[in-house]
Each structure stands twice: as C-alpha cells, then as structure tokens.
Image (cartoon, rainbow, N blue to C red):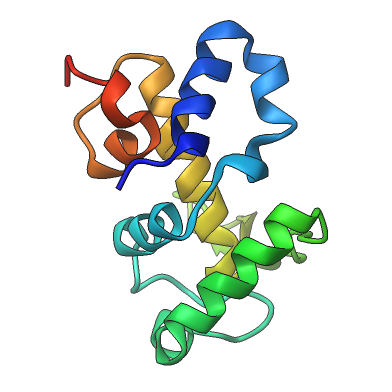
Amino acid sequence: MTGVGQKRTVWLINKSVPFFLSPFSQHIDLAWLHEAYRRTRKQGAVGIDGQSAKDYARHLDANLQGLLERAKSGTYQAPAVRRVHIPKGDGKSTRPIGIPTFEDKLPQRAVAGCWSWTYGRTSTRLTMLCCGDSCSNG
C-alpha cells in the first residue's frame, strides 16, 4: 500500500519541512485517507455542518474520493469551526473552543500522522503508510 507520493513525502520531510508543507496535498492518496478515517475519533461533537461521523460513513468512499479530489486540485478549504463556550474549572466563567467538521478532521489526521514520523514516532499504521518502505526502524 505504499505509493510513490508517500515515499516522496518522506523525502520532502527529510529535505525541508517548509517545502514539505505547501505541496502536501499532492502526496495524499485514498488509502492514506481511509487510514486517517479509521484513526479519527467518531464520538466527537458535530461541526458547523451538523454532519456526524455516522452520516459521513454512509457514503464513505464517495466522501473520501471527493475530499481527495478537492485536496489535489487545490480547491479544498477548511470550513468554519463551530464556536462553543465550555465552563472553566471555577464554574463561573467559560472559555471558547472551536469544533471542526468531521471531514476537516481527516486531512488534519493525515498530516498529523506523517508529521509525527518526522519526530521519530513510527508506531502507527498511518505513519507507516506515509513512510512506506523507507520506515524500517518502527
């Protein structure tokens, strides 16, 4: 399941982190997004679009393919986050948090999986997909 794009991503990480960040979407493939989906927490609160993980899973392959196409074409834009105020420990005040949409969590998870490899944590399958055969020490 290792693709040329994944091996190139590893090479880019090793060469130059700033260069790696801008063309990242060109190195993601469908297997990588499926693994990101598998690793994403499904019980979280819904984002601004109201779509739950269960709703997203109903058409998982089509949704992931659409996400991949938007990422590769450069048309993907992270949607706005839903702002929620949660109580602080004192019970008197609140603090704002942002809840992303479920779909937006997937590219975040894919990037985080490959990013963690940069720092030598090669224990997850997602990281292994990112690294391909060049990750033999994990």
